[in-house]
Image (tube, rainbow, N blue to C red; front, side, top):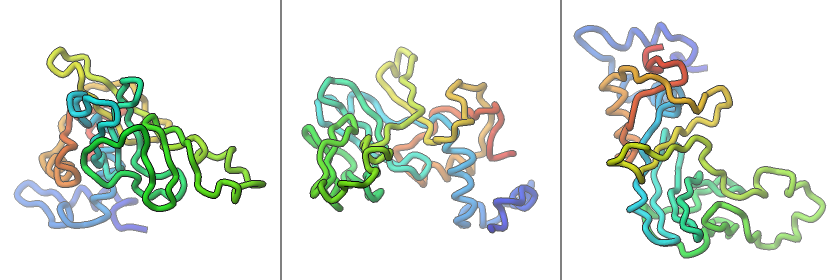
Length: 211
């Protein structure tokens, strides 16, 4: 059990009026807690549709330490998928951007997916005969990002942002903005330069870094 996860008092003591403890910047547990309790519950900018103009165009980035693909599907729609193979969890796409054509192929065991995430090929599939593969989430392919919002602002009408949390008790309803510490903003930027904070909202309307 970590020293910070179950002790909010220990976290509060890290920041004083005239100084900040080094653990805020260097402790792995603090980083994981920030990803879980703040950045996975916050709307974070992913990308603009102009970055994926043609079918098969994609960009990849990490949101709250979770790998994500933004790709233009063959029907012209933009899809947001988790960049993890449904088989063993390997990253399917290693490049930051490019064009994948009509499919993604995992470099580990060559499971192949359409650009909407659906699974189309498993090598040596007969080896799964008699198993319950078809009853598992793996058979559905790459997992779609659950919380996706297309901006309604005129100047960002083709921009997408997401929340990485898959927790069922995190509402998809936007909450009033709250103040996030500069430290948390810096930590999010270091996690992924492309994952700029779009707004600081949580399910409760309170800043998660201050709870």
